[in-house]
Length: 547
Image (cartoon, rainbow, N blue to C red; front, side):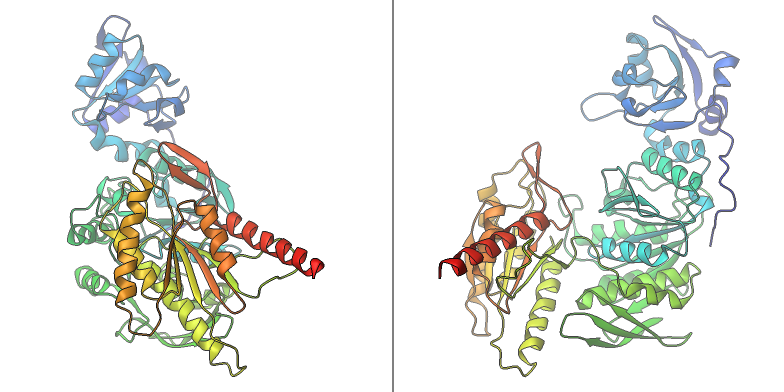
């Protein structure tokens, strides 16, 4: 695996060198004309690049690409940089405008975003061990587990849904997988700060749109595949092909493919392992023959787990503080990836205390008094398969508690969930069905409605919940409620719960905002749930004092 040997920054390329690389030409854009750039202009060095003109410093390159509504060259005046990458259309916009400077003109500027960004920053990913993880569910948990396990042993960078961090310190970013210029700048910053290992989530959007082109991946991991993002991918087959790109197409210009580490618990994983061939490291938790095969899981009453894994190099055992068979799969995949990246299997010991923000995260009220003895959690489950996995895990925990021999009545399971707007419509009834097939209480509420009518979204989720409730054969008739206001829905679920019950608020996990129209409103399920629990404590205290 690659590791950093020096923190020195590589020599910055000149505009002339970038023109030679792209086969483009340098143009001197004056206020009224465009002519051949001077030799002096060609020797200007480029320190960074960005597609948002406002992010370009004086020694930077503004990447002005054509957009759906306007050409990026229209915004060149907002850039402080000395140069612009653009195409012939963009050059015309620059000449007609007031911007003056040096333009690097190429036939297809979008094609050159990734390789140029990597070149400008000196291909920083080649100086670090870079691990990419893709799949529908479990990417965040798997990468977070790897980051936590590596901290203390290595200098670690993390890029993903919960944010970007360098050695645990948060760095502001927006997308799960940032645009190529931003991503390469992040890699460069990590390299310059001494990072040796980067773990990152790689979305299907990023693979299709080429955001990770120019990244030298050393190891790639696959979690699973289930319905999601069918608003972007026409079919599940297309979605699978997009995920497969991380394993089958070199992202770095040098042509290197990463070591594939694939969980084969589902059909998609098994198919991917067939594509990637004999070099594939496989992981299984359900009896499928694999390089890393989970042979035993001891689940304790509090949900913690002791996991035994068989592999050619000898048996590995580890403890996991978070519940769920899916978390066993995530943790074992994380361990297999780290070993493939050169770590010793003893790093499994670091998994014992790992907890993932917004993933099966236990929440408690602020009052020192516990008014009601029930379990309250927040989870990011926003796909039907993820909802099923979470609820099955919690249902199993309730079964084990009831079988403990203390004579207690089996606890009930309540879930609060919704579905996002401007996203896959087919997923909505399946979300409701997944909840009503298992839970005793289903409260359908608003998730991120975006530009859609929230009531229309809730109606689709409710329809699926009603159908699933009618088909249950376990004698349980789940109660289904509709409460659009998410905070009120959370309070209602807390008010419903009694001793021994479990309440889970699903869908948003670690997110700190709710998207309504074009506005992001401050909203955190964890805060709202904690407040509801604290209020319950206060109300209970008041009742006790009046008794």
